[in-house]
Image 1 (cartoon, rainbow, N blue to C red):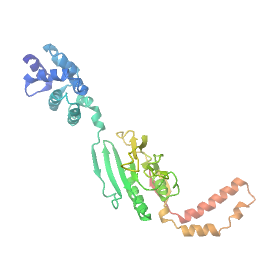
Image 2 (image 1 turned 180 degrees about the vertical axis):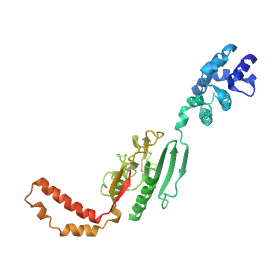
Image 3 (image 1 turned 90 degrees about the vertical axis):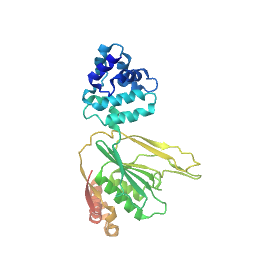
Image 4 (image 1 turned 180 degrees about the horizontal axis):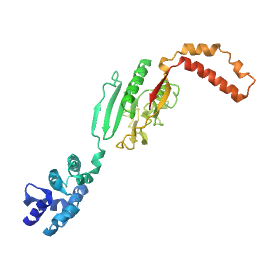
Length: 327
């Protein structure tokens, strides 16, 4: 097989020891029972090395084409030696993924490597009081900020003010936000809670609609998953947890297209700044106005309704600041 090895070496595989080429390729081609991915890289070449004249063309047809990438040969050799251990495929592919700049054909072998998370890091600048921890996850063309939150039931408005500020700061960095954890607010009953104002102000929605905590007298949804409008959710649900370990069930979410190019289209929206509202003044204006003069006016019902709404919004605009945000 020395002739075969030299032909393969001349074809651009550049194994450091040409005498080993044939046996490595043969092993890779014949050992596909444990790891289909490894064998498929050069299976056809491995099965047909007996005809030395055809080696170069077979390898080229197999898509290896290593003449422009010195790293290819060593990766293929490593694959050939390790194809009995399926768990090792991923690390071999990852190594190949780092060497595609000079060999476009490498990318097709491990195209899925492009979907891997390239970097994740904590964001302590967004955290507060060890009750909300943020993680930044960077995909090739997409940034996601994930918050894990726990609010003790006894926490007062100070928590919600900090939570709101933390979310606003996160959204100023990335429009893609996911918040998970236990907020100790029942999303099945507490519809007037302050957290719903925070969600509306920041364009967040809850995607969990089943109970997550169970006790002898009631079921409640204390563990929502809040996502920003830009997150494309294709599945989310509650995961059963053995009640001997926890009285809360788990939650899980799946997002679409995390590697798509970011859509730079934005729009502006006016929102109410309830935290800085003068509710005392608003209540006084509403209480002292003669509303019957509008209700009993000799106009159509539609016109009276319009006049009533305009007057109410006049007071609201006067007492509750607004601000423009970019979505």
